[in-house]
Image (tube, rainbow, N blue to C red; front, side, top):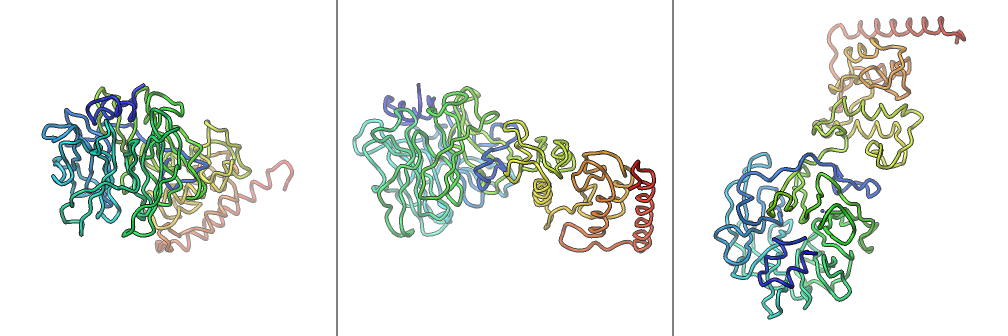
Length: 464
């Protein structure tokens, strides 16, 4: 079995662990651990200059998402691998040409695993160990006085480096915790384990490292440090190295409960070195699924997008409601319909509808949740939405765009009442300005609905 550490210890080339190496959704990393999934679209090779005929792995980003750092063996590399970067004008623009990072960083000894602090003033990475230990790694740090200054001469992070090989550093958002992968005595002989070292302030040294996850390499961590991606080949999965999501209750606990991300991220080959773009819209990872180690990306699907079209619209809301009457609630079956349990309470109910309305509004650029009664989800509860209810009144239906606003599976007086309560309000937090005839329209619609209710009551078998 070939992995990061076994190859690093048996190959004369430091970069060998990368090129022969056997990790929401959103899911945003802030998502509840009870629903720890990452939902993504179809992965594709990162376009532009990022990938080359050489090996390209270990993506990392500046805090504004406009620069990607990565390790590459492309032409021009000084050692087994160097750290390169590419810029873009905005997060919607393509990546520009790749450039080699400052010569202060790269050397004839290979470098990899770049990780830049949120301030942009510290760059952590790993390098082939210069202490004379064969095929080992050590963590380095380079600093600079400003984000536009060149990087300074790197130095080993002595507090965390050991005789056993230490790499893949990941700095927490506040800059006080340094997570890294090591193969200490007792760790798995393949993927190593994850350790953390903390410091009281940015100007003080890191403390003694402590184990936080056994049998996997941490690659990305949430800002609260309670959720992380790890890659491992010791936890069981789809192939060699797979990517997992792990969580913990507090920063005093170890990470546990690994959840394999599954397809389309993981395959029968190797997936590792995962990162979420700073804007939370794209998931990046390294893989050899195409034969060579390259950087891949996939759009992160919002929790409100159930059909993977990267939109949150009526189709998705209807898909949730088709699970059954949510007013009483529908039981969650793990692996079958748990994607609709947005609140994580084990039941698909009106709380999940409210959660969907809030998530979809945010995704679609609105300042407040969609209102119940907004039958066409245009952000305004108006006469058009009454028409939606009126066209299906007193029909059995599970669908939102047929007037089922309260989730009881029938478009009835209760749904009209919801429309009437919210009429002429909008999802931007203000009341919509009605057209001149709106006052008359409301009166007519109210009388019409009332007469319809009377007719329904008169013709009901019980007369009630």
